[in-house]
Image (tube, rainbow, N blue to C red; front, side):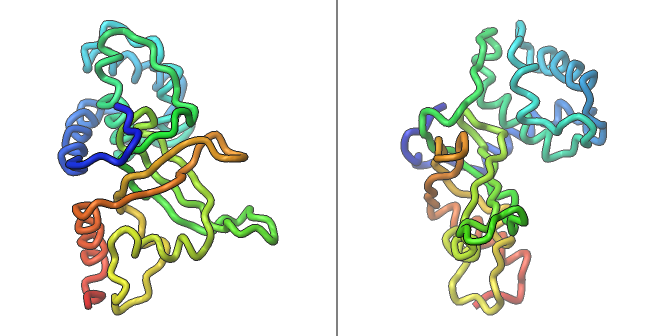
Length: 222
């Protein structure tokens, strides 16, 4: 699906339950080291388990979803695979080729923050000193982790934008945004193929994110 505007009534929990159901089908790969042979076997297993007639584009697209050669396949990688297969299942079932999303058109996707950290490679004088990594949960980039450079001010305030109370009793850190969900607008930006351009957070998402923060910091409630 392609969202040109943030949706209404989308349930992250229901979506992720469907993703988890698909990811469980490929549990046998968890803990294995990725290699060309494992990728070939995984492509064949996807076709069999998902009952696709054929899926010639899997070998082209899966490397952007699963770990690289030599890296361990963990549960998070299988969840990303589940997101990709849930999004593109109808096309894959019909044997249609899927083109890799390249930042066009600009679109919205349900998203999850996977990392927020200081960028050690930043040059002196540059304002964008943090790397914000977000995972698209659906849409054409489903399963892809997208990195965006942001300012320290943006990184520090992001947890509050996503639902953390401004009156919390502890210092809120950029890393507190990890695991929180939102709607992200993605598209081409100067110097990068695509990045996060804008974000929106529904009331349900803010509540979910606030509860996540409270579970992590039970003494931080106001």
